[in-house]
Image (cartoon, rainbow, N blue to C red; front, top):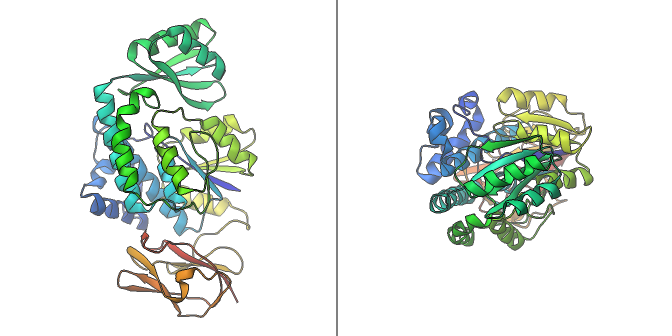
Length: 394
């Protein structure tokens, strides 16, 4: 069973979009630039490390880069049973699961990044990774330090991130060393993320969330705040707001995915940190990282027959045996035809039947069979080759 994990801020790097230039999934970048009125390609191709270090740039660039890789996986017919994302990556996970549209996700991520940048400017802070101590001992070090310092990320056994004011983080790091930590590694950030010092960002994020449509996820998404799986969109609205000032329970989230049956963890987006953490959290877990088109091909080729296989046509992709995907021929807003507006799973579809439209383009089934599900939501912004419906052929 595949679980997709999505990286957060800190995974960005200069030129990370270069391998995708000319790939069909680069259309995600063009769409993002159009939606936001920003040159997103500049962030993925030309921005230097200093420009990408700005919280708003880092978050937007990482989100879009991850969606490019996700789109390539979709085109290859590779889909997850469950998802989770580290901090910012949770927004990507919700987009992957259909809870957030691309348009809403982009606007929400941009608003979050700007709000967190402003909060960090008003209340500067920093973070540090404590290696070699159990979570409760790191909590003890924070208490011994006094001041404004908290555990921010439960990343893996023996790896915990602390966050807070610069002086308090330094004091907690010294306390951790005295309690037996192997190392304390400074993280080059200027904000105390996932602590109460981020509270000023809450007002802007609340406003952005209120303007966002959230739908029930189509795949399991495990939340940072409580390592639980949630379906209610209103729960997710609250969880995304709480995440600002709450620790990321990543170790617990990955373990929850494994407990639910995940056997292979695929990190989708720049970097490979989450793959390394998964190996430490779940002994014997399979892992993969998708940062380049070649990674998509390698993953698709490695999957056993029970998993989807790469497409043989840009207009209809193989899943397995007698299952097929009908995909969008263009970018735009999906609107189902009258018959399929109620997602009549189990109903028969004939070759050439119109399932809906994307802009002015009709979406016609290239296969005859039984519809197993309409994948896209009415009104969802979709991209070329994005799956619209899943059917079992006659």
